[in-house]
Length: 142
Ligand code: GDP
Image 1 (tube, rainbow, N blue to C red):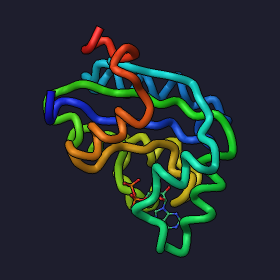
Image 2: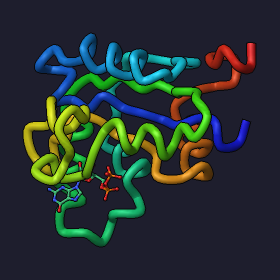
Image 3: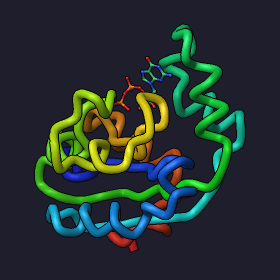
């Protein structure tokens, strides 16, 4: 399994604006298989935990507030080179630097409200998948 999954979230801003369908379609068209998915909402505590690595950053509190401000979609995506290929599909963290045709270029509202999350390593992909999903909620484990 290692190296073949990544974890994405459709963040509250993109969910609120109704971009879930088009984003999931881009994910499918790019060749990813959705092996787990849920509509949920992060509590403040969960958002703090998920972004704990950014605790010392000046934008941490604002990011936590934003990420717990409304519903999100969390999903585990499967594909060869899932982490790298998905980072390419979503584009740069700052949408101003994201390439044309990427999810963030199309749907991000700002650097913070940048539409989607994508894991940055295989190790984090597995940790983040476990953060959201029990094994019984993943088709690869059913
Ligand atoms: P990612 O891996 O591309 O999502 O980027 P990071 O791990 O560096 O940052 C996590 C999230 O924090 C980003 O997706 C943005 O939502 C937010 N973020 C990153 N840098 C900044 C910043 O300088 N200001 C603000 N307000 N938010 C930021």
